[in-house]
Amino acid sequence: MGWGPFQFPIMPDSASEHAPYYDTLFMTITGLTIFFIIIVVAMIVFFASRYRRGTKVDRRNPLTHHTGLELIWMGIPLVLAMAFFSWSAKNYMDVRTMPKDGVEIFCIGKQWMWHFQHMNGIRENNELHVVVGQPVKMTMISQDVLHAMYLPEMRAQYHVVPGRYTDLHFTPTKPGRYKILCAMHCGTQHSEMVGQLYVMNPTEYADWIEKGGNRYKEKPLTIVEAGQQIYAEKACSNCHTGNDTPRAPTLAGIFGKPRTMADGSKLTADRDYLREAIKNPHNNLTAGYEDTMPVYGGTLTELQVLQLVEFIKTLTPEKAEYMRQDLKLGTLGSDSDSSPVDIANKGASAGNAQFRTTEERR
Image 1 (spheres, rainbow, N blue to C red):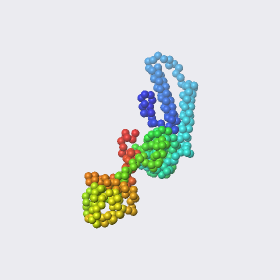
Image 2 (cartoon, rainbow, N blue to C red):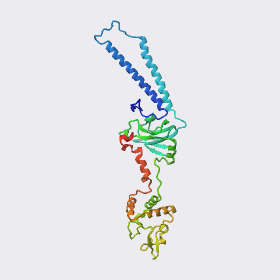
Image 3 (cartoon, rainbow, N blue to C red):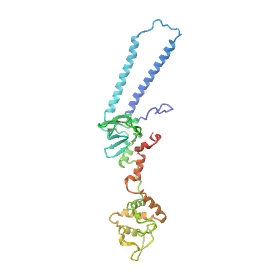
Image 4 (cartoon, one colour):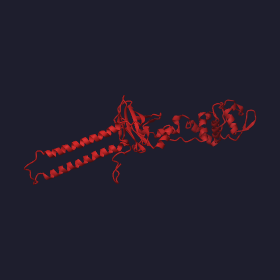
């Protein structure tokens, strides 16, 4: 926000329904303060210059009082004070009257983070997603010491007290990303108790809700990637290494190659062969190996078997070594805590705000 061509950022952005009312009140008080400062300074300069020692002015009848003038300098401030009191009281009553149709969100403040709980079960830490134009009613409590939820762009702030529920509401009017701050010195890391308020349009917000509060769309796995994930989950590489071992033959470069069975027959390692080897390995034992392969006929669906077969097709001798290294590092595991989506969310989360630079927090 700024004036004229210079656009100096003298105030935070105005992004809530109440913000213009507060800004108008603030700018009016500031303007009148500057006006009276100019008048007082001008009069001081004028009288100091006019009645300085050595000037030729009439000093015979100095005034001790002037009733009219005293009424003016007391009456005008009184009228202004009452006007501003009424104006600010109305603003306060408006912002402290909770909307009946507001979206309810619960907030817990604790050293040094903000935890938000939506009614639909979505939880957020140091981040809050709301929809533009929709009133938000926030019920707050502190888990430890006194905090203060402060949303500067919303012109909203209220105490978060231990052992007592307090509330705050605002209606965002502009989509964007705004600050969440603590306006109460709550400890040594008070300055790190920051977050981000995301105001989204209805379409984006509906998409965010549909994904369970996930800001990042999970990229669908290709059939080979899905097969690779199954390969990792079932720990196939523990036995099927890059070379033939006493425990199991290698799968690197196996697809399409002839295989010699324990009974001396010959089979080609095509899709049907691999499917049968996965679901019922005891039916076709490879020459030189015992019947130690686990049976996956009842644990893998046909789709999973198909995905696994397509992945095995890609295991060339050159590629297999790299694939095994990835698998050993667990990059393709199914643990949700290590999924790319969770990692991306955690990395971009305002919960990591204390590790960001000052510039990134703006």
